[in-house]
Length: 376
Image (cartoon, rainbow, N blue to C red; front, side):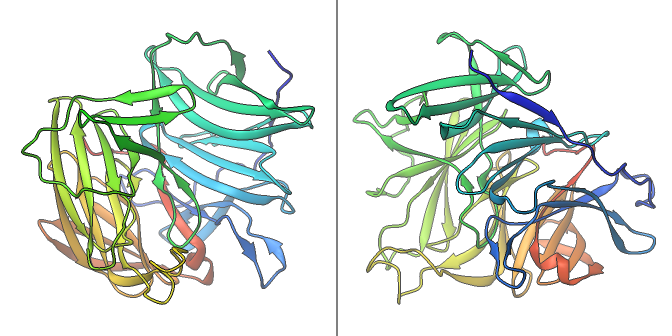
């Protein structure tokens, strides 16, 4: 086992504040993996408690080294875990914060000269949360090895090849940022999905012949592997096909469902068990020529998919919209510099209420409660 360090970071104590009566505190995650041109510094990652009485943001955590670039921010709602990767020129450390009190983060670093190739979060059969890191060495780039770290106990562990474990994914994790947690995959000759993540393979039952789906010659991505379902999203490939295909595998009932999602560039991420995204279409000036993919044309509408119901609804929210959290049937969404709360009733949003308006909200892309009520 190689030398990997864990650093416990001191934090500002969580303020009790005033929260919604009878509800758990609402936290907002500020930041994105990009450069802040205005300050000529990397965007920091900050977590705020929302005080509903005074309608203010109370900062409770900030990444300690503001000179480090943030490479990715991921929220794993099913595991109540926040992951932040950072480093000056490449990923040099991974910080985990629990979505529960106390908000005590720990940072994982590896010795200089070792380079992180990839990393994934796994859940073992005995319910341990394990980080797998694939590393190489500057002295021998052809030698790639894996290290495993049990996040809860902050200790390195050994896992045998036959250890039963499931990977967790966050999907496309923030609007307009190159930040994703997905795995490419393909259909074999037997119409079974084969996806590889490090040394872990997905081989599900054969897709039913009667299941309507796109051919998707550019392949698929697995975007979610939750306790109850697995989700595969087709890659866009022709400008005259204005949908993407989502295939849902129901683990509990061992069956498949196909959903066609509007928007050639609509991407999905997991928010508290739901799949959500902003409807987006290709930009003819860039896409399908050099296949740059950016900038896509975002619409005023968002999509919410219920994997348990195998259905979706589309809501017209407004310009620069992003769904931050769905808690029971309460929805929190961002419109530019504003956050709203509404209730989902069928295919309608009832009583949309402005919670806060603040310039910082522009860069808030995630929200959570300390004890999250997830979709069943």
